[in-house]
Image (cartoon, rainbow, N blue to C red; front, side, top):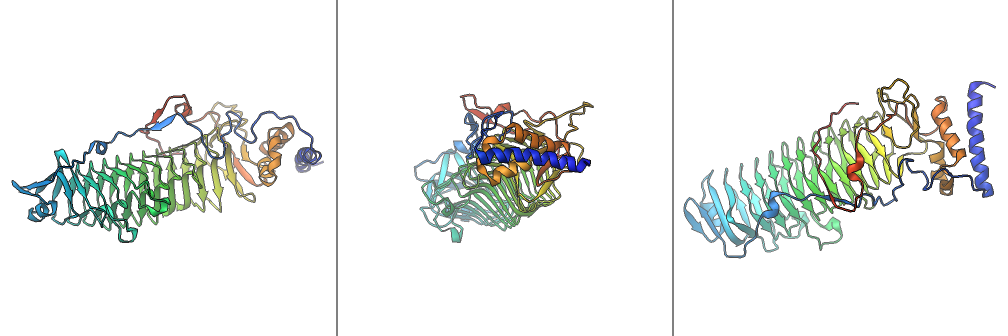
Length: 488
């Protein structure tokens, strides 16, 4: 019998053992409990409810902004006004308007170079539930330390706490509550949004009827940094936005923490998205850098840590995807680099749907996921053509030359996993000797290429320490600061 025929015969025999056992109802010996989970840790349920001991730090400057209820006084160049708008209208370019107390009005800052700042005792602008509360239509306008609240509810007319229509606006240490949109940047470039706290309208349902926390429309060169957003539709929404840096933001309890649409060449760095429907939704964009972010417990109806749909030529590197329904979900994503990510305790570690080609998938640590990977049943995905692959907890490895890379390839998806997909009742046998024999054959005989996933050079040890995410009974803050090199 030739070598090929022997290998095929071995596989057929192993599958036949399992098939006969299923047909006759014979209970094959099971090596481990819990179905097709990674062998080095417990399976995570499909709702990815792991890591309960973690919390997300909320320590931003804007949380200390106060909203006094005393009548307001606005001062500019030594003159005082009972109306903030009157003070703005009296200001010359480059002057500062100091707000003290409460202003029940809607304000348009149309003076170039104007600074609109709160006094040491605080200031609030309340729009009374109508329209846009504060509009920045001049160029180089700064608003600092002010509480903005009470916009209208019309999403179609962009009712917002702060509406930015002039270039180079700066919004710093501002708190925004009870608004449709928190901040809408409308075709204005080089805005800086920093140390802002946005609380959406929690009582508005469904969530899609709320506005976004920060909505970036046709903007270039804008920065969103050190900002906290909760209870909005999407935390930060990009629409035709380019060259935007979103850095060190925390987003919770939204539909999508960050949402890109038709927005190329942007950077998303050191952010935390926790307890959302989806952590980071990357859609119909290219040239994105998504680095060193954390996606934690995003387990809504979609439940992805990172969703990459119609994304091209982008780098997804050094992220921590923890306890999501799907850690990383790929759909028609082409030519991307998925490197050095920790994918831990998700329902499914990585789910590749539709056709996602020419990806570099290397240096990732797949640890204790309910299922490490999932692909379309009729496709064969080979990871990868680089000198190193990924770490898969529970994989059988052999490192004879001590270079940290196994000489035995690993198949996180093969005949067994596809059979379980097609026949769910087979899951009880997934760790049986018969199925283990099938897995061994799939890893040992490179000529047999059934649909699934192949990592030709798996790592022997993980690149990440996941112990910071282990439940301990005490809340533990997430703090992502480490740099990651985007190298295979």
